[in-house]
Length: 232
Image: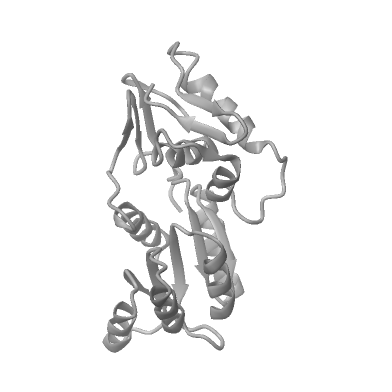
């Protein structure tokens, strides 16, 4: 596990039927700032992928009833293009070819290091489903996902993991009116059971760190909807 979190403010679907491995991977990803939903079967994975919009899917090949190959193939046929990183204990070239043929974006053979899994996820998230710049810029605000660095007007701003995750999602949709529900779904996962006003609380944290010291507004409240990130 890395020392400094790489919080990407993104929602991941982890599909793994081995409970201990699923728990370990999910815990590691959440520590890095990802929102993580889990599924233990191919059928459950398809159900969740049809309900939620995921930024990436980590998909084990060997699943009960419906294989990872079948899950990926079905998602692609349905027009769901979230990047898919396939995991398998097999090290056969034919299996890797098959995984890529059904639409997987990358392939990892077990056992693997958690650091490599993170690096591959970051690479997939940067380029799919649309090209993402290595450093996000909105007005005088910059955010670097790889180094977890945020600057405004050239000055470094220290954020917590969750603050960083929220800011990144907003910077990926500048000048868009983002609902509180969309912010909650992308920055927190389905297991969140805390206060209902958590989005408002964290927007308040961002305002204190990104607006007050600079004397310029950045996040605008859209009455009855949510928030929008202006260019500052």
